[in-house]
Image 1 (cartoon, rainbow, N blue to C red):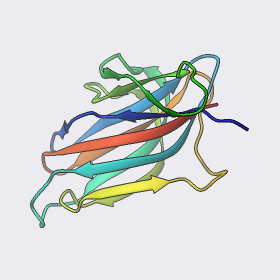
Image 2 (cartoon, helix red, strand yellow; image 1 turned 180 degrees about the horizontal axis):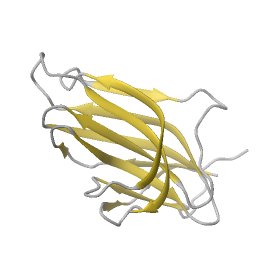
Image 3 (cartoon, helix red, strand yellow; image 1 turned 180 degrees about the vertical axis):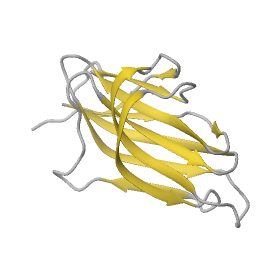
Image 4 (cartoon, rainbow, N blue to C red; image 1 turned 90 degrees about the vertical axis):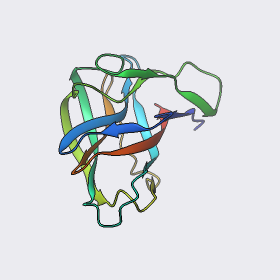
Length: 156
């Protein structure tokens, strides 16, 4: 089956405030298509080796409130492969008010000075969304640090 893939990025540093959960990047499928997350990357710019790790969460979002573009900055998806089509989803970054309702699918701790995590889901195990719902990356840092992230998404 032919696929159409897109990349969304923060496009710059997203500042995290100490002990405050912040949704840094996310996608919301349109009413007539779903979205499937193929991979993601997260990186910090911290320099202190003794800094306490950041909690990173991949969450399913119903977007009952604060869909991309509401309490966040809209992101334009860049098509990276497949037939040229409209993305079929909206994207956002750096929410000022958290979207709801979020369900954590994966969580891990990451030292804010240790570089980058890249994760590609095994074939057939990629999380996808219902129509009109989405996926987000959320970070909670014990101390202020900046983060950059990207998500690679297919329209389904």
